[in-house]
Image (cartoon, rainbow, N blue to C red; front, side, top):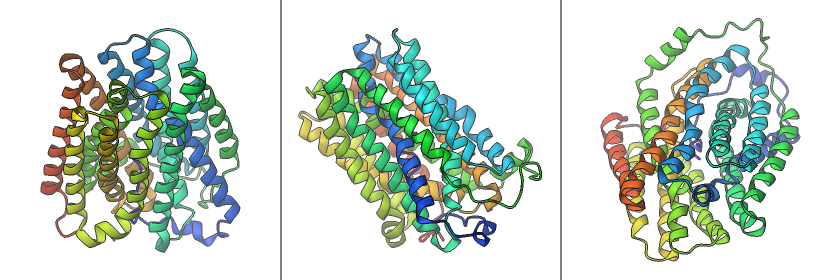
Length: 415
């Protein structure tokens, strides 16, 4: 997810009241969770900017590259919804954090192995397992805050997400330039190991209900959570389209466009910075100031349309500075809708069903992580990189139209 996906600075449903009958969360407990979160996202993204050049260097076709990049979404599609249900049933989040970081360690290790497509495909599939643990990550962090501070909680989490992604992606090109492709994967293993240690120290507030006492949900009950929320279904589809664009562009084929313009491994770091810094800043502003002032639906539509224009402009960038400019605008555009979609997904969901709703939402947008780069890779094989980027632009236009038709018209402050 993928930045995704995943980056919300908007008000969220209240954390369980029972949590706040207990002792308040200390600064040390906040700090440990923050460290684990940053290390988690650094592990997942430390090789993303070099992934497509790395696969191309191994002699793989565009179709294979698209399949491997997109396979990250396959395991998330399969795992995230059941994981959310099971997490609600267990009333536990922390064990999934630990398992996710261990999966991140294994993922980086698989990329170091020899071979053509087998090890990279396995590594990317296991990375999807790691990314699936973001469901309990999100729910656990929300429990650290009282209801009236939910906006600040999601803003903090969004910022930590982008910090981890930015750290990993900035280090990626430099590490590859310094010590070769495998250096980034080896460092990723070390970061995942540190994150696993930190996750053991993460504090999980007691819900007052043991695992054996929890009633949990059946699959039928879980689907009822989805069916009774048309808004959840709509924004999940929009998030699917959003992640198609994201994994076609910055997390997919934009680095190949940079390489075609003569970018070195270290210059890929500048490409990452040009996208991620505006993305981080605007993610913090979107829910707090932009959407309340201009309206949620208008902001999401504007974001999709701007992203469509920037995506279409990528293959027409004649120089690296022009390409960097398109990424600055694309990072801004995608930060206008990704946080708002995440907030809308669970806005009306009772706290006891939140992990289930979040699991469904993230499972659906995982389809975009796979379908976007896979279809774009096939189109690139037929018509060059231009074909895939124009496909991504068309998705942006379609998403803007769907947003205008299917999201609430009078939803300005999302409270």
